[in-house]
Length: 311
Image (cartoon, rainbow, N blue to C red; front, side, top):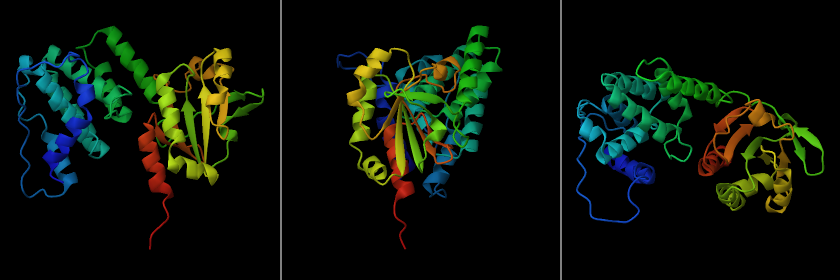
């Protein structure tokens, strides 16, 4: 696929995020100032190579002193494409690009703050399709080390970094206890299955209902559940027990459904539950495979990992 066509697709994907502050009423608007993308030499024909070339030079044509453009919607469109390309290259390439961008933006405090805000919007917001907590950790480290931010901002970044380091992909998930409706106590590590899908949810949460409905409608999850290869552990991390009990009939009977009686998940900050719902996919050793991921991504991962081998 042509790289610029791919970037165009990414722009469509993130349009809802990039334009969330626009007026609700559709009105005629002046054309946005265009951002000039770098040209990829013809010798780069592989999409991955093209993406790596672009991400290393993405802002080459940006005048970092043009604060009028950087404050405008055209810049948001460009940053949306940048966030998409960051997710298409190896981590070390993406980190190098973020550090280079930060250094260039850091020549002007106002420009740096603009970049920092957009990094947060596109890499940290759990509703952003380009969310990438691992990469955002680099932004947090740079924020903490920068004198361009107030102490309060650096302290907030330090807290976010502390939480982001918990239960990272490739590490073993923190164990915790939960209580079932019967009163029986259990622990995450007592759940024996090839895969474990933790569904942190709240009865009064509309997004949780959407997640639950999508999970119930998934043929991949249904098949793996019937085969006994995956167990869904639905956990209520808050304290309104009456609300949780009233919601019990809404959770599928084949799921393990419990609540955090000790309130340790939030109290001891065992998991970074900055948004509800939150999904974690674990393997049988309780190693984190996907963290705070959209269900569509988890479904694709499971489909790929459990598909029959072809000769």
